[in-house]
Image (cartoon, helix red, strand yellow):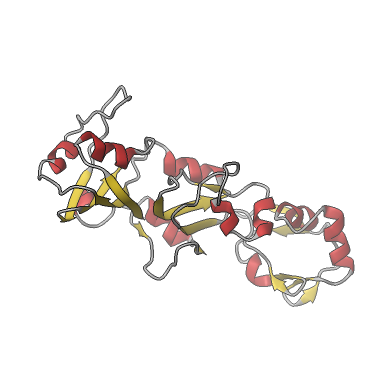
Length: 251
């Protein structure tokens, strides 16, 4: 159900400026709803997702209202942080989006040297549902390895007994799907620090490149270029919590 909010507050929270600046835009006829100029800045309006198709600000379609969920193809060398040095993932979004309240945040993290599917949202409840250990949402990675697989890794990863250096409990069972002697898909249901890299290190190998291509049944589209993003609809969000197809589905 959509939240009903004052127009000036909504647009201010979406980064369009202060409430006073939004009021000035209204007086200048720069905000239109269903084709007609908005004349009352403090009008109450439902912040539904279709508002982006119904409203324009200074001749441009309104940004997605709160409740936004994005899929971003994270490029190599970009950090999932607001503060770290170097290129940050939030710099890939429109500048105004970085002023939104509630803020758009990454759903978990991919390290600087990992590429692929990254979710971002301003919906705190959804974020916590996805990353909650109780949900066991599967995440699939494509790993390129320094040394050939020896054939024993699949059983060790699936056993639920593999210990990672510095941890006090074994990792949950994971599914390995070899693709070539030095490439494999690995599907995990936890989100430990550098988990996939550390799992291969625990069996005597080294990950040279890592790419996440799936969360639940939601796959990264082939035509979504690195650094690009797209808005997710309800069906795509539901796919995050759906069982993936293939060997990982039985895990």
